[in-house]
Length: 543
Ligand code: HEM
Image (tube, rainbow, N blue to C red; front, side):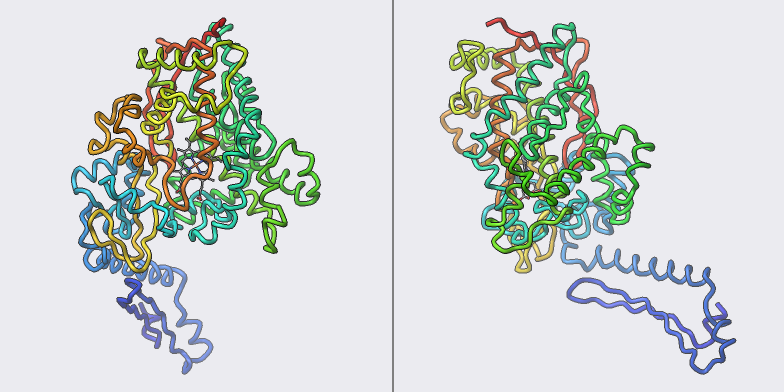
């Protein structure tokens, strides 16, 4: 490299610091003694500069890998060598080989034991006791930003790294999700249920079975949208339940898995022009229009807050923009409101829809349990057009047990929810974990633990009715635990009770034998069902 001879030299310096390995690639140029001509001729060509940069980066990468494998504080934990080297190993497994993370974790734990290193700075735990050690009311541990930024909702309280930052906005919205606030809005859920039942009836009259996955996704999406924004996006009105938003959500789901590995890809996804996206992938149109309508609604409200008075009930905007509750803090911006709205919609729709579908799936395969459930609901709902109140339904022991068992088996949020161990470190699963480590446990490892649940893969609602079942309650962890656990739990339970009761009281539900359900799914934070959906005939009952 002739230009290097002219007093320019390249230095690569490597240091081990308390923050890990740091390398510096420094290009020095000692040209002061040269003439102008010399300056230009001694400057590196573009190719040379590119080559030096690439070599520098490769060298840095190599040193980093060596550090990760041999000198990193997690070097003593078992796991695949590739995972210890770089996070790209996980990307290769998930994106390159298309292995669902839910399956990969199981495979790795079988091979390497209870605690595995799944990325250079990340551990996953198999023993169910780890769940309560990581997620509990005392642990105010940070969320792992690298993971949560993939949702492209950094301004929402859900994606906030630090629990104190999230606390204020979560507190504002939590008013809307209290048991009493939700019971005031029972009518709203009831209205969406009526629309669902009408649509199921129409399909029966037309001699068709119904896609219950789509039907429940439409129901939960319309319910949560009406609840949050006082604006249903009318998914239930689409022919055969092919709601444009809910289908687009499924199509877009893998993008979260891609985005969690690269900020650059996330940037491209975020900045891709909407008009072009609509052409390239017309099936994503639903989500794009949904976002556009939300932003328009937010801007209109910020311009004229009196619009909030016209809403038939409280919405997230009335809570978030409430000046008294904000106690002198600046009101949220358009972007913050948009991110809150998107996260709440996503959190509240897919989860409930999935749970309902799984519940019906298992009930249809357990005719005895189904028959007992129908009789139990009938006992508080003898006259068909006089539906009971939620408060009566939640006292029904079998319905309650069916819902708990369904939630256990459905695990509607199967992702490991990564948290960062505080600087003082922590004991998890009997091991000393250094501060700064990202730790997680997917709720799947609790729900399907043989240590806790007898025959964990079977649908056995009666396990929740046996005398010793109280001890199981602690292990129903699908809403997570601690300060960042599910905010919508009261709403979720209400939708589950009301929807299952209405479905089995008002319809004789039977599998469509021509379309056997295949509930194969892959993990993209939420489960993406890739096989044949559950189809059933829903014949209205006369009395
Ligand atoms: C069966 C139904 C549901 C399940 C299983 C479920 C599960 C969960 C889980 C596991 C988390 C923790 C996520 C994390 O740590 O990253 C969570 C958070 C959350 N859920 Fe749910 N959820 C359900 C329904 C709902 C509903 C109906 C809403 C209503 C909007 C909702 C709103 C939220 C919110 C806002 C958070 C974020 C809380 C925070 O970060 O502080 N969820 N949910």
